[in-house]
Length: 357
Image (tube, rainbow, N blue to C red):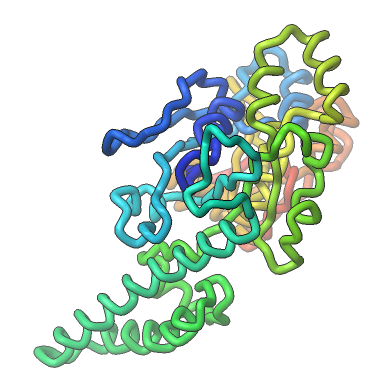
């Protein structure tokens, strides 16, 4: 999974990046030209994997890796021209880091602190970026189709022309009703306004006790993308303390848990993925697939050969394995089901794939 932290300048992207990854990158105001993004891979916390691993201490525990990228701030109105568009298009999910803190030493580019306005403007910019791409592609297809007939090109042009009015109205691709065939035909565009979007508001320390309700704090309304908050300045300082001091200071500010914990807990629903587990000879491992994935697609997440040679899946909920004490005991108790390739994987399934080699 590839998650991009992006947003306007001086919002706390690198601070959040450090909080999520423990990277310790020095926070800078990058005003002296292009800078390479910060990138780290970290394991997705999964208590159920911890429980399964505890039952098999002789096996290696392997969590789902999450690649997190911290982009340099993008100037207002410049998303469509940004040198970092390629990173945004390749992302599985976008995390818009929004400024909610007050600091006279760090003036806001637009003159006032308004997370609701910044969120609205950024969403408009993502839509505009997609509209620019759609217009360019329609224009190119129009030229090409004049030279040579192409049924597939005609279909693509029709879908894009149906999409264009929605984008012109400021609606994101995710808000457009599309058939499965249309969605498939648009997949290669990796539209920004179709990607999963999560807002992370960097709160002022005086608002730290309201981390759990940022939408209410800033009047975002029910139509806003999923929104979480963090208090970058205070939480960064707390991270440097010992465990006892951490709890004391968090309690003093009314912070119930580190914001990173809430973020990683939100990742599966934000990206619309679920987790299944495998218990092999050498490792206990967590895997993620999109919700609605079938057993054969889950097999492909492990290896294409398993997908091609799929015979059946032996499935048991991880809760049953944890309750009974091992996968073998679950098998002995008759708790394991045999499922075919069209079985829709459920969150928390422990699966053993049988396949022809």
